Structures are given as C-alpha cells and as structure tokens.
Length: 567
Image 1 (cartoon, rainbow, N blue to C red):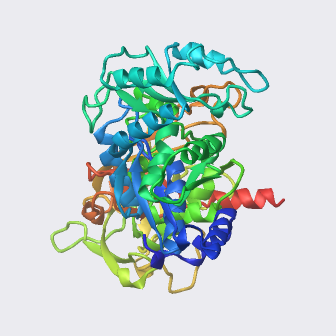
Image 2 (cartoon, rainbow, N blue to C red):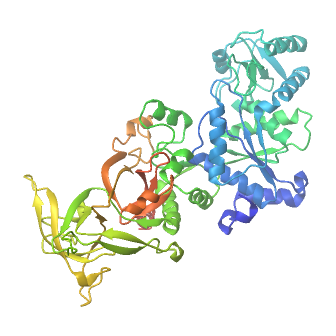
Image 3 (cartoon, rainbow, N blue to C red):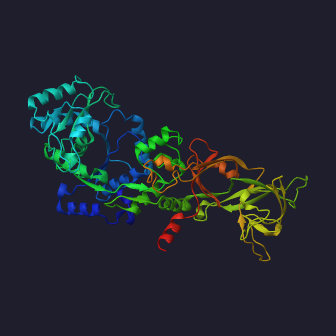
C-alpha cells in the first residue's frame, strides 16, 4: 500500500499520529519517519497482526517514510523458513510491500560485538546459575531481588567466559550473559535481564554458526537502530520493556539517532483466540484442520474463508489506535466483510438442502419431452457492468427444504399446499400437493405454474408474499458446502475456567454434501467469493472447485448489536 491508497478514515487522529506530528515539526530524526513490522517466524500471522501491520505501514506512508519487514529470528528452536515464506505471502495478500526485508540474524555479529562492549564497560556479566534460580532471584513486584553471586566477576573473566560461550565450549543451559543494571529496580525488566543464552539447535539461516543467541530485548532495539527506524510501534505487553529498550540504546555507539518505542492496544476479537500457543494447541489437538482452517483467525484461514483483504484493512482503520486493550465484537469485522462483498460479489443460486419440485403443467416439446427454458438474471445489482446470465429452467427444480411446509406455522409465507409464491426470476407457482415418506417428511413437491408470469410478475397485478430461489434439476452441479459457526461458544474463551478449550463449540462446522448449484458456479475460480442468493457469501476452495466455504451470512448482526446497545 502507498500513500495514494490512504483514505480519510485511515488518517483519523490518534495519539501516535499526534506524537509523530510533533516529532516531524520539531525536526527530530531530521523529519524522517521509518517504521518496521517485526514478526517472529514461529507461526502464522493472524488478525491481531493485521492491526499492527496496517498501523506500521500507514504511519510510514502518510509521512512519506518507509516501513520494513524484519524477522525477529533469535530463537532457533521454534522458527522455520516455512513461516518466513508464509509471512511474506500473507503480508502481500493483505496489500503491503515492505521497503526492505531484514532479519535479526543479519545483526548477530554486531550484537555480539556490542555485548562485549557492555562487558568491558562493566555493564554485563556471565552468570552460571540455572534459569530457574535466576528467575527466583529476580523477586517480584514489591519484593526485593537478589544479586547473583557472579555479578561481581572481573571484566576479564566475563570476557573469557563469554568468548567460550561463543566458541561452543559451554553446555546448553550452563550459563547466560546478563546485563548489569539494578536488581532492586521497580521495573522487573530492569533486574539484570538475560542478553544471551546457549542453544544447541541449528538456525534456519545461520545453521550451526552460532551456539549462543540474543534475547528479544537485546536484539530488538539494536535492530531498530541499525536499520534507521525512528518510531518503534509495539503492542501494550511490551510497555514494561520500553525502559530496557532505552537503556540498551543509551550504552551503545549507535550509527544514528536512537529510535524510541511507543505502545498501542493489541487487537482481540470475541469468540476466538489469537495467542500463538492457544492456536497451536487447537491445531495439534486436531480441533481444527490445520492453520488454514476457516474457523481460525489466521490470515491464511480468513483468506481461505473468503475475507477480502480490503475489508480487514478497513476494519483495522475503523477501530483505530487506543492506549488500553479492548475486545472487539467479531460481528463488527463481519460487517466490513459483508459490505465489501456486497459490492463485488456475483449473485448465484444454490440449494443447500435440496427438495425436488415438479411443475405438473409444464409444457412439452414436439417430441413429448419437457420443454427447455432459460431465465435471465442479474449478476450483481450493485454493479451494472457485471451484466446478466442465463439460467436453465424446466419441469423439475430443486428448492430448499425450509421453503416448503405441509402444515405452515403462523406468518410462514413460503410454499405450502394452495399457496402461490414467486420463483426468483422465474414464474409464479402454486403448490398442489406433495409426496411424503412414512414420517411425513416431504420427498417431492408438486406445483403448477402461470406461464403469463415470466420474470416473476403477474399481468393482473396480484401480489405474493414470498420469493424463493431454485436450481434446475437436470443441469444442477453437485457440490459440498461448509457452514461455519463461532469456534467458541463464549465471547471471551476461557474467561470462566482459564482454559479456552472448555468453551469450544462442538458444532462450529457443518459439511453439507449433495448441494445443488446453478451451472455458472462451475466457472468460479479458486478463492472467488459469490453470493448464494438468500443464503450468504461463499468462497470457492483453493484446492477443490466444488467445495464452498460460507464467508458470512447476509444478516448484519453488528447492526443488531448496535441497536441493542443504544436501547
């Protein structure tokens, strides 16, 4: 996305934009604005990342700056090149192109040299204690920390031991390098944080070159400084890390002005989770079918489900930037998806739970076979340029089971014995009866049609109270349709028990086999979203052209929530 793609809604004021406006006006950083999106390649991007991405790139674009992509690849045990490739792909799908791509591993040599510098300044030391003991000695909020017995090691000994760590002469877990700050500091992040740990795993980029790896806090700010980042935008969980971010930068001979960190609220949605750990648990436990399962909030899953990238960008812009965390209704996101798809999606007819309808007075041709007919329907009433299509029509049709009741309840206006309804773009039909099984379930509905009502309008002006959709039986395309509900039954999964899995919706997906589609649906391309009239928006599966995923329904649930909230 470029600055030309920014609309007025993307530029609405918030405290981060106000802060940057002050910086540019004062000439800080020479008027330069540079941001970065720094994911760790240990999982797939999700809707929460989308907010950070949109903010990082928008801030840079509207200030004529650049936004880079930097992979925070400092933990070889969990990272993989497959995640790198997926992140690049998802970022491009969302509509953003970084000015450049970097990796924290690009800076391993520089970070190591700077670590030695801190040792020589008596600001870092090698600690031989176990990780658990180090954690215990840090104390807690309102509790004092305990100095490590190795805190007073001589500088020369620390240098020698650190170089042995670098040379691979120390066992994993046997020692770490820690910054020497203040074990009584009120900010727990400042109590002699770990800078390096020994890891035996091979790194996906550097292989076995490095037996030691920097921590996030040691690599993050320094990476920003090396790249020339001016404004390091992070989510609120990193607020306590900001003081450490600044401390590290203040000790080093940086190539330019020190960047600074500003935090914003992360994005959370109702009825789902965005924790990488919890998402991974859903995948490994087989609750969902991999990271692209349309019930997940990963960008790959949302793409497969048919969410337009533009609707995600618009949603992120609409919710804005806040200083406190909040959970947004998933119905709000769906309303943006629905609005986008209403403008762009072609209309098609599909019957998900088919019931045979026979027009008993349908004419025959000269050979005695049922006559052929075609109806002309609009492809998209929101866009005349999408034109029209012809749809086969004939003696036998498929309709939805729910569109017929042998004994209709009150205020049921669809098909029932003696009642006349409109077939969408077809004719007015009147039900004359139905074949039922032994349990009273309809097997076949019989109707007559009025040949003077082609297109669905009666010349005598009589009105009907219902219009139903249909698919011609001979030319119908058989397909599978996946219907999705919320993955979790509660707005905040795990809020009551602490375990989101306790709130799983066991009926979050329903697969319908033998659905009947109009022939034009054979022509949809992978990932294309169409509107099944009266049913919702459905995306063609990327691998199976006869599998459709329901993206969203037609009803705007967000509008109902807003109305209820306003009383």
